[in-house]
Image 1 (spheres, helix red, strand yellow):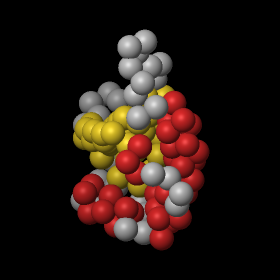
Image 2 (cartoon, helix red, strand yellow; image 1 turned 30 degrees about the vertical axis):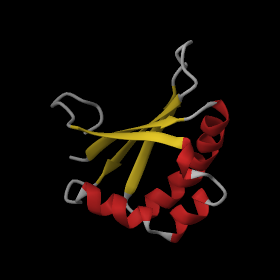
Image 3 (spheres, one colour; image 1 turned 90 degrees about the horizontal axis):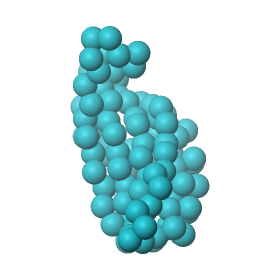
Image 4 (cartoon, one colour; image 1 turned 45 degrees about the horizontal axis):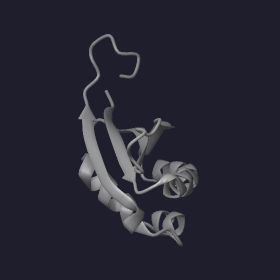
Length: 109
């Protein structure tokens, strides 16, 4: 059974979100090289009273893999550095990571 993780990135505004959406399209093959599978990437409508925007990504790791170790290896990789080149990391206000455990009947097991 795979280990799933929901990653929620809060960005400082619509321009930052648009730039990070493009970066995520580049992340997908690089993450795959490091045994992290991307199942989907989404944005959500922004609240009327907020400038911040959110991007959600559902990823998975192999059952025997240590999630933090895999993520650390990817974040220090040349693929990640190339993807992030020219992007001001300060535009990411917050990153929330939630490990999700599939139920017995979940199609994603």
